[in-house]
Amino acid sequence: MRLTVLGSSASQPAAGDACSGYIVASAGQRVLLDCGSGVIGNLLQHAALSEIDAIFVSHMHPDHYIDLIAMRYGLRYGDGGTRPIDVFLPPGGAEQLQAVSEAISKTQPFFAGALNLHEYTPGQAVPLRGPLTVTPFTVVHGIPSHGMAVSDGASRLVYSSDTVVCAELEVAARGADVLLAENALGGGAPDHHHPRTHMSAVEAGTVAAKAGAGTLVLTHFWHTADRAQAQHEAESTFRGRVVIGRPHAQVNVGAETPVAR
Image (cartoon, rainbow, N blue to C red; front, side, top):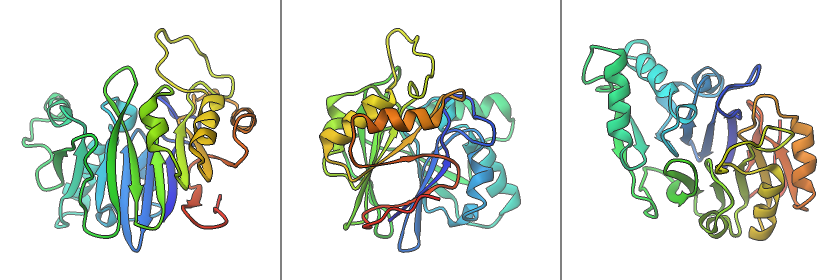
């Protein structure tokens, strides 16, 4: 498998970045995890929209799904005639996304012919055509949020989604080849949320170490964060390889030497 980071910012994209979006690919199959602000422009440097086999949204905060609107327009009018892409949303997500569409367009059903909306059940693997299997799992955030365990049968990537350190993430991350972990509070980012709803880089490193992960990829940076500082913070608790998520960074999942570009 290979991970490609499309966007690694939290809430507001940092200059030159986008919000959360990641391609996981294996044997020609491509799955998109999250689709936040600015993701589509970066995605098109790696694949056509029609080459995405499925999309999974971790939770219904806009920095994780809002570019589905841009994707709908691209598929419906720019790449017309292609098959609709299956989008897997958390429970209740289809109704929320439909409400957004009704607020911005009189054309209804808005997603018809472009995106097929489904809702996944946390803890149940979602069957896809091809080698990849995606299993959403519940984590702890300000709203219902779900990490994603992605496997091609030979290697495994675990995406934390937005979360605090929690038992659910620690269990899912055990033995992962790559842990793709948010660290919205890392690198000197403001830590003033009460209650706390995100992890720091130190905490992401601790989860990776406890899980025995092979590589930690840090993502979901606050736009003012010092990413080099965040890397040092994660390395203080995790002895494995730490990769800074940034647009177009690629990491081999399960390979002996991860690629970081």
